[in-house]
Length: 77
Length: 377
Ligand SMILES: [Zn+2]
Image 1 (tube, protein in one colour):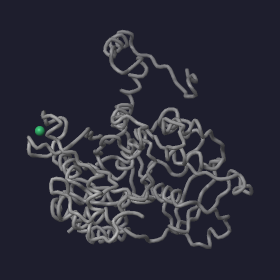
Image 2: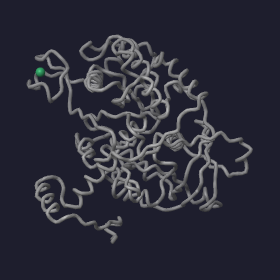
Image 3: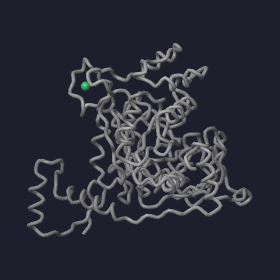
Image 4: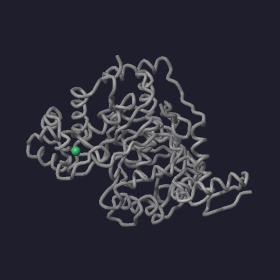
């Protein structure tokens, strides 16, 4: 189920009630004003740690050029 | 080393024959926008591949995130007057040009849309006051925005390009040096003892420091770019280990958006490969628009930022401790503290005087004074 809240799409997920109760207790008096905002925070933290990354490597020729630049600055020997 | 923001380091540099794009209409852009084009193309703004779309802008304004939930706080926008683009429509391609930087870039116009300046200014700068330089910029923007991807075809060789390392290059450098944890220090001034203290305190717990001055448009009275770079060269030569410190520049304009800009500054340094970013008091602030530590507090909204902020509240020289201290380590009263006053140091240098060695390294001061006119006039 998705719904619009303040222009942003939200979806409902199910978690065990005892877990939800535990979290509710845990976030009392913290900056989190709802179970949802806490769960969002935790999931963002978790997902950012396991995201894939990609970066193109330099070609052999470009790598030598970059090395020359960095040597000229005294940063590589 | 940090992963690129959003997972992918953007690289949109293509060597095309100018004959391939000769028929495309040309649009001249200002120098600040051309710096954005360069930063997009080189991956400084990863994961952005171009200027923001409508849904991304809306999400950045409301949520401080791109539409796909990636943290993003400063909108990168391309504005035009209706008149300038009256012959263009969505789906067209144009060439963006800028004489000063020799920038030539293809822009694929995916969207042309309108926006509300008041909402934008309030969200990004927390004020609608046009005395705020960032708000004034927003109010001076043109009425339409273009969202679309950029491909850089050409740019000029410029002053300080030897220090203008791209994210791919700094990442390569860190790998070659075997650095796993790197702290970035942003600056717009020559270093005084307090700056050195902050950098070295952070460096103590990581593998290397990237000194990363922001170079570009200046106000009257600011130190000139060449003065900032030369003074750091001197400091690094005399007081830093060659194996532990490097410098490269970042060409981008200051927005003075305080907390939101602190996040943006951290994201750019993450793309350079840095794992830590030093955030001081009133980072990227101007006037009294932000609380002194708003730029610290905002980081708690981003558990998924992927770069660790290193906060400094205040530092000074304590005559009782007989050393440089910060508020976490010195118990002594204010009366023992001498603040590092950039203003005072500037005054002395303006009169050709060397500040006390408690404030600035003699070699650094001498380097600055070797310039006839160290300040922008
Ligand atoms: Zn003390």
